[in-house]
Length: 430
Ligand SMILES: [Mn+2]
Image 1: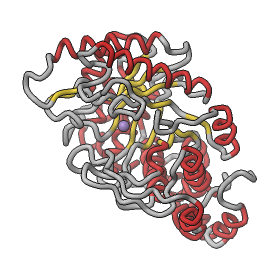
Image 2: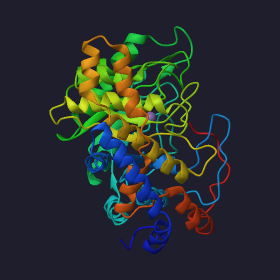
Image 3: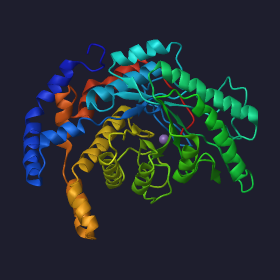
Image 4: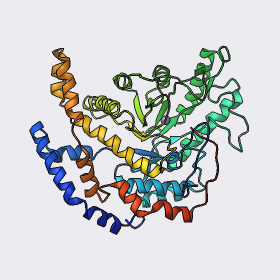
């Protein structure tokens, strides 16, 4: 425990003043759940199996296309990003993996990086490639696309970069690579839809061939941006088409923000699961488009409905259901650590509520065409305040009853502002 960022003394004194109140709330919820036919400790054990990955890039302040406003004490390299992720995990006890992004997170020695992460209580999730921006040492530009580019040399460079990411991931014990490309067009006629997709499929098949046997390749679709007329993998249909063409190690990743407004995302979850192609999730929230707002901050009910489908999928998966869960959001106006603690709880709440759904009652109502009783089966679970279960889990695991309160009291950011170099002014990043 010595490598952990927040001292045990600090956590103990924080919890000491809150544990009596928590036990009171937990007891009241236990009695309520008992009347509902559920044992709170069994529910807690189930919720305790849930965990998330944190993206390294979310530890810095995000931005928009217009600007980024840095805060003092932001991490400036992968080691500092890991330290901030370790704070989130230590206090929330539900985010033990970090997802790296290359070349942003390049290191000179990945064995050292892995050891360092392990000392902080962290492991590594899937790796992410980046062919949506040029790097200082890039020979060819991605300005006209990457894996689907018309120029074969550009495609070869993009393929080689993805294979490099797999090689790094092998050293870190990652088991997946997530591929998202910015390829697309801004003008009607600029690009032939079919030939561009053919080139993308051909390129991704080379990356697929380089996958170790126990790895997955996750394809992330996005409706628009940076291209505004057409995007090469714009929707779950295109993503599924390519995943089915490439083979069983290729699956689809659903980012909650990458759909048209009002899209029924929970139905997409059910569809992808039906064909065994639901590979993972990127959690965030939105009001208008790909806003990358904090998970559950705008529409917590939708998050619950997504998890309800995941719970249904898990119940019918014969033990093979293991999607990669990750936060993917941009923190423009908050301290990223606070947003990540808050979002970890919001996502865990949705998971917990979905696990409380009375599935027998739900299926019975569905089969009897009883819309109101089916809806009530969902609403009854949604209406439970499950936060005492999550707080008790954190307490029992050495985390914080109130993570953000303790984080503020620890003055972590103020201390880091003294130690870390300033990030300075920067352009927006989405
Ligand atoms: Mn994403």
